[in-house]
Image (cartoon, rainbow, N blue to C red; front, side, top):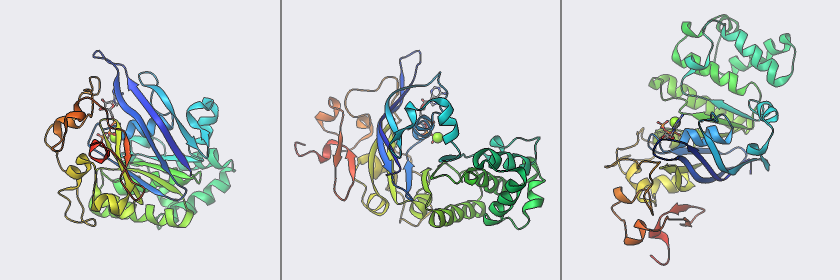
Length: 321
Ligand SMILES: Nc1ncnc2c1ncn2[C@@H]1O[C@H](COP(=O)(O)OP(=O)(O)OP(=O)(O)O)[C@@H](O)[C@H]1O
Ligand SMILES: [Mg+2]
């Protein structure tokens, strides 16, 4: 096992009480595995990743409890100096907006070489060779020309492919990609997804993929975690989970996607995500659930096994239900 999150909880203080953005989340990622995390906006997908890597700003965030074990070592307990060294080398991040990540007044090459020098501890001339090879492997026909350019001068797709080069510069074991293609047109999106798949197959790098798009999930993921209201409510292998979701929330999300290969965005489920500062007793999905029972109003569901290495936090699957 490469990464294991155990009962991770992150809160944001607010006037109406602590917002439980990440609520006792547990899941793991094997070496070379692609794990997709899906869920509506505000369900805690990004804050989970930012907490595990200590990139969430503290304050305002408070990582209240939990562990994030990378090869058995708790990233949450590492001295910050060691954590900074680890980021980029063993765990790298790819975000949605490449233009926000790139410095507008420095050339792409200048920034890339700096990143390579930092993570690989090589000379500037070795970094240049590595950078050119890296960009070529990502489909850039003329890497030196790209390196001379500035972020405002390239397309969104090229900027995101360049960001992928930054992420791969340290040869990480795990890439955390948060909505890496959601701002791109279909062609650029396809290009990035194909590259991610190729890199993962070639290098055995694991990917923690955060997305709204079930088309992306079915193309890339081995396993899926569904988040709702700060909780991981269901997890399992991609085909089983997309084919036969168990949690009523997952069923609602997946219901409108005609088949696993179709491009499909998450469907709107009637009702709203509960106020994370005033979570109701029992199951947070209860008010929107068409299968709710009396017990759901008082007892918070625990993660129950639902077959084939799958779990669901839902009382439908308790023997007592
Ligand atoms: N800086 C912040 N201050 C206060 N609360 C925050 C902050 N960042 C996130 N939150 C809270 O954490 C919750 C989870 O946010 P998060 O960004 O993880 O959602 P998400 O699932 O990534 O959504 P999206 O799909 O829109 O990216 C939000 O609903 C919000 O209430
Ligand atoms: Mg997010």
